[in-house]
Image (cartoon, rainbow, N blue to C red; front, top):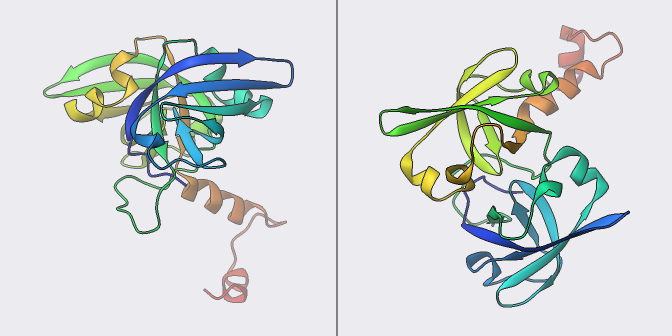
Amino acid sequence: MFTGIIEELGNVKSMFTGNTVSRLEIEGRKVLTDIRQGDSIAVNGVCLTVTQFSATTMVADVMNETLKYSNLGKLRCGDVVNLERAMRADGRFGGHMVSGHVDAVGEIATIKRDGIATVYTFKTPEKLMRYIVKKGSIAIDGISLTVTHTTSSHFSVSIIPHTLSQTTLSYKQIGETVNLEADMVGKYIEHFLFRQKDNVLTQAFLMEHGF
């Protein structure tokens, strides 16, 4: 579990892509200070398991399922990535609940200034838009952000200078892709409601389940 508060920017040192697995090597500092084999690290919003590490690098295997739903397969040596360690139970919760399980890849449609902020608009797969609501939370390349506007195929976020300077969005251009993870609460509610055979939320059902 993550919070969407990026701890540092890392650099891709190497990326190996094979038939059954890819291997990603990342250079970092802060996220490596207390790292152990088997720890979870979010790389551009994707939860990866550390398989090897040194004082300055970490290695993680990336399976085909992850490559299918994220843009990690497009990373190249030297690319900058957002890094976050798994949240601590006794730490501050500054963002929102982020699982690190990416739902889809979006595309930057526009970048505009709005006073001190920068507004990014993303073209988004229709299947994901139903989970994205105005003033709701969204993780973009692992960054916890608030949705400011939605349409049937796009949504926007407004980003303050500090967030922009501390994340990979400052390196992104129109047409580039980002990893998207919708707020998990909405997905669980939808599953809970529509798993019923008649797809109807009745008084009897609510009483049976303690409501």
